[in-house]
Every structure is written in structure tokens, then in C-alpha cells.
Amino acid sequence: MYLVRPVDFPDLPALERLAQQAGIGTTNFPANRERLNDKIASSHRSLQTDVVQPSDESYLFVLVDTSTDQIVGTCGIEAMVGSDTPFYSYRIDEVIHASPQLQIHNRISALFLCHDYNGNSRLMALVVDKAHQNKVAMSLLSKARLLFIARYPERFTKRLFVELRGESDRHGYSAFWDALGKHFFTMDFQKADYLSGISNKHFIADLMPRYPIYVPTLPEAAQEVIGVVHEDSMQSTDILLEEGFEFRGYVDIFDAGPTIEARTENLRTIAQQKTGKALTQTDNQKGEMHLIATGHLENFRVTAAIAEPQSTGLAMDKATQEGLRISSGGYIQWSAL
Image 1 (cartoon, one colour):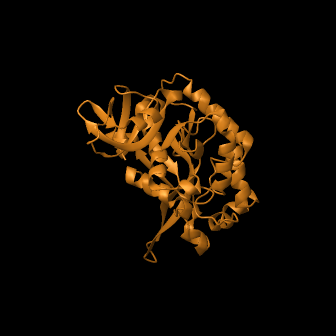
Image 2: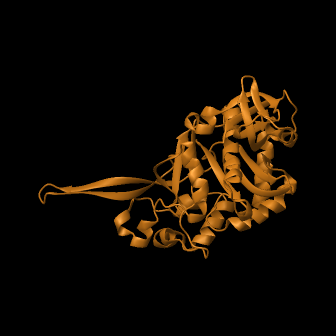
Image 3: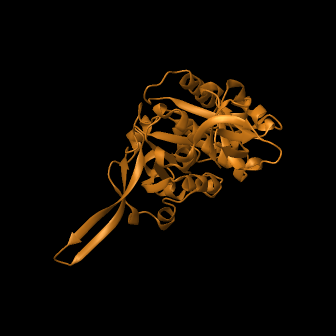
């Protein structure tokens, strides 16, 4: 059985191990003990804060394999980006160059530095141990965040986005960074990615080019990876796309990985979530796999289990109830997995 819960300070060694596994390109989950400890502290503060509207809160969750009590994954939500420093992206757009005299009319793709996502909520850092990257564990961890958002809508914005990891190799080489960012930052992709994860982002505004970047002027290898998802992130990307996230023409300024977005109320898990009582299954009952959540803020828990919707609630076995620390008749929230 897998269980998702809010992170706690004793989880720090497990987060360090997962950050090492995540590798280069997972900017918002750096392999830095101090920064990871800050993320735990920020999540604690956010869960203890009475929120009327979203601000700089952040929430970090872990995935637990209850058979071993081992933490095997993590993910997070940032309530609103850009409250401290602007959140930068490249917007892909077209520039028209025309000459009536020569009867030439060209549409040229260009990258415009922008902070269009400022003031919006962001899903972050979904990392799962390689031995547990199965469909149930990955889906549970990714979608548990959405049930949290559905339960506490006042803590998040109506627009939600995710930056997907772009193409780079295991040695830290990014064709896009090598063609563009390296010339302005005078450092390799691995160092820039690490600095972005552990420090404030003022250096980005100081060093990034101010003018549009014409895509045809970039080397072919760099052009080919614009908007391409890293192969290690394909499974988590598919889960998000199935939820209803869409690409709207924005990419990351470091590796050109795509950014996808959605209105929160349009996401499948949020639109279909229901609330009611936990009911105990009888031996002859069947059902399908469901996400099941319970608990308030710091005690929030989510699992995935076979369950059967009924008129007054959701019927599940006693083992599932025990894993969620609830009894029959307790208040729960659920959505089909």
C-alpha cells in the first residue's frame, strides 16, 4: 500500500536520496541539504497558516511504501510564483518580416522572455524512486496534490501550471543551454540549474538577454529540443496530460522544456472529486481503484485502493481505513483513479 502525506523534518535524509536520484534538470528539487530543509520548514509554516488567498506558501508531500515505511517519492505545490522575484519563461511567438516590394512575407518563430506566469500556482518536483515508478504510485503522488487543491481552493489560484523537465544528458549537457544560456551566464547547464534551485532568481533577470531570440538563428540541435520533454519525465507528463493540462507555447529558459497549464476546475480529478462517509465493504462487494483522502492540513492523507461508490459514501476494506487512520463513518474525499 502507498500513502501520501505532508513532509516532516525526519524525512530529510530520504529527500536527499531522492534529490540525488532526480539528477540534473529538476531545478525546484536540488540536492542540497540546507535548501531541502528550508522546503520542509516552508511546508510546515504553510500548513499552520490561516490562508484567505494564496501568497508565498508552499506545500511538500512524500510518498510512503507502507509495507516498509520507506519514503519512495515526493512532490510539491507552490501557491503563487513571482511574489518575491519574477518567474521567467520563454513565450514562443511569431515575428512577421515582410517586404511588399520583393513580395516576401515571412513568419519567424521567436522566443520572448516574459513572466506571464507570475501570480499563479505551480505543481513542483514530482520525483519517485526508480523501483517504485509504477502507474499506481506515480498517479497517486501526482493526483494527491489535486485533491489537496480541491479541498483547500482558497489556498491556490484558478490557473495552475507545471514546468516539465527538458532534454539534457546524464552528464549535464543541454543543447539548448549550450546554444543560448551559456553565452550569457558563462557557466555550464549543471551549475546554472543548481544555482537556480538553491538561490533567489535575481541573477536570471540580471543576465538573460532582453531581446527576442530568433529560433532559426539557433543551431539545429537546439531548435529540435524546444518544447521536448526529457525521457525520464514521460510517465509523469502523460498523467498530467490525461488530467487536462495543455501546452500553451511557453518553455523553460534553461533547457526549453515545455510548460503546461490548466484551469483548476477543469482538471479531471478535481472536477470528479466527491465527499462523503467511509463505508466498510462486505465480502461480496467489488469496485475500482480510487484515490481516497482524509485528514485536515497537517494530517492530510491520500491512498489508492479498490473501493465502491455508494449513495452515502465510498465502501472500502478495513485495511484501507486503518492505513488512513479512519473508521467507518469518517469524512473522506475521493476520485476515481
